[in-house]
Length: 299
Image (cartoon, rainbow, N blue to C red):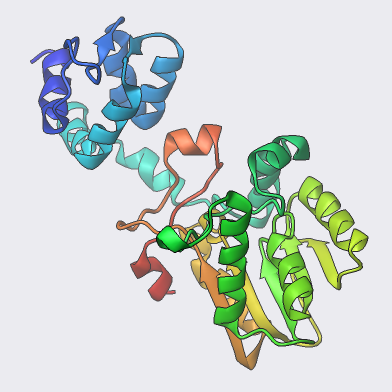
């Protein structure tokens, strides 16, 4: 069986044809694509596109079909049978903590310290870098409104009251802290590893004379003499990594009052994964891993 025949069998599950005539069919311009995908998976697929080895008129439709058909999973199983499983390499990866304190201090700036100007253009006025809450057809009409609706929902879920001390783990530019301080009268500390986030966020909070304090520190190193009434972590657990889930929750609860509340907001995966997708790791979120419900519940 040729490489083209092998890949066509896999792509049949997604109704995608190699060199077909439909908009979502892949046009192979160089057969080197096959070896690169076999060797590097999603990273090889993406980089071979960047290098002009394949093209597709409706790449969004093609990717949608590939994802819905779980092609990467099927390809992974088939690849093990075709080219052999590199067990030694896989085992070696698990000997190292990809989201250690040292690695995290390098990975976070890679994504977030790209310049605040970029994020100010693409985000809402509070610079909320997580999903918004649109509340159906009678909800928010614009992004600014939808993000404030989400922030207010979080505040109400935690039962915030004036004077409470709140810790935000992975606070970003401080969207939650400034909103909660303004609307609910709480006092906030926020942890981030991004110098640019901390600088701009603190400046914004100071301009409004809000009791908001940015701390450039890893969550595993933070201590406090007085436990917090509430702790929130919005869109940060994706950076924690499976090797650190236990330490993450342990750190949060060690900083929380006995009758306190910890609210966790994260993207969720239907499958438990141990490492980052190669493409996402290299180009978007280094060492980012989306947790599953089993992983969250089994810490």
